[in-house]
Length: 81
Image 1 (tube, rainbow, N blue to C red):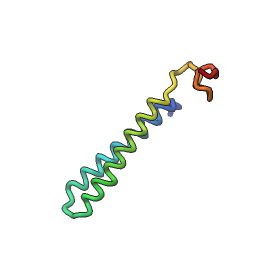
Image 2: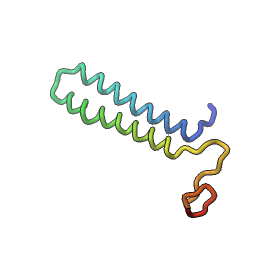
Image 3: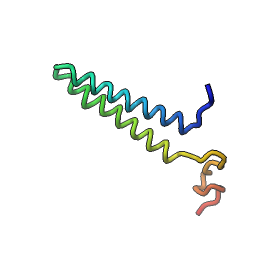
Image 4: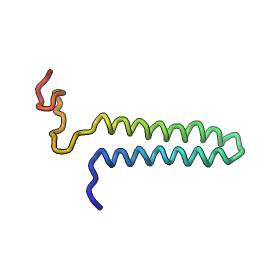
């Protein structure tokens, strides 16, 4: 298996969380029990929300290949603004 870029791993994690949330919500829609709504609203929505947050953080922290990462100073070359 090829070594994936960090953004690819984060996006795969985000997709897995969203997919798990959708599957959980689809399953709980089929069950006719009051607690299934709790699982639908709490766990399904939480998994989808976590996937969205991981995806957005992956986009914010993305570094183009071949460029140095951002230093602690905020600027790419380490100088403070």
